[in-house]
Image 1: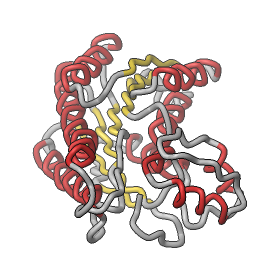
Image 2 (image 1 turned 90 degrees about the vertical axis):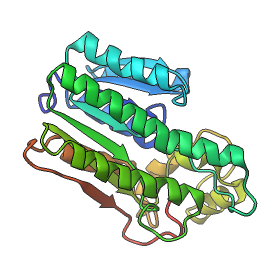
Image 3 (image 1 turned 135 degrees about the horizontal axis):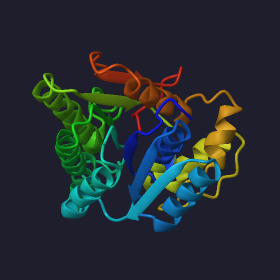
Amino acid sequence: MSLLNNKTAIVTGASSGIGRAVALNLAQKGAHVFLTGRDEGRLQEAMRTIQQKGGSASVDAFDLRDSDRLRAFVATAAKETGRLDIMVNAAGVDHPGAIADDGLTDWQDMFDINVIAMLTGSQAAIRAMRETKSQGHIVTISSGAGPAEGVRVYGGTKAAVNLLCQALRNELENEPIRIVNVMPGAVATNFGRNFGPEFINGVLNSFGLPADFKTGDVFPDSPPEALKDRGRVPFASQDDIVRAVLYAVTQPYEVNVSEILVEPRKAFPNHA
């Protein structure tokens, strides 16, 4: 429990998928983790899991598009613990429609969550780290779709995230705040809930897994776990991303771990 003992961490998108996995791991390593996302029930479940394993966590469920609420959440975490060491922007959304067919609502949702919430959370974390004189890491879970070519509007949001992380890194190079950009390839997580059920169920069937997924469902933990036992091709594991985050946030502040690309050993078309 000593690796991150007495550290304070915030994780957005912590109710499921990569965000939840990162939050559980940071808590296991000793950090007090503040979890946020939209699903109150799943956040409470994650907090109970952390506490049952001897960790410490706090939760607050809200829509990350509420920038004032996000700023207040970050400020409260720092005020209650007197520090902020780790901020993980893990929330993300993908509406996989074609640009010619998709709608403004879906585009707005992707930019609001993937880009604006990341900027708002990062800015709030920087202010909190400065006020508490904390040496911190701000980690954003971007995507391998960012540096790829033509991966829909989603890829455009992640390309923006990658460039903005670089801009933040340049701004903060003389401060003890490191900006880390983790870019996963295809990962079997709840992130795929907006894809068509034919696609998701086809993937599950190909691995001999139960296939009764419906659009909008919360992706259960069992398929990713089962995929681990089947060689995981063509998906990376949530644990792979967790290890990348943990590596970055435990490096000395003199070391700038700027980007980590984590992909499965076999390529998957149109990174998710």
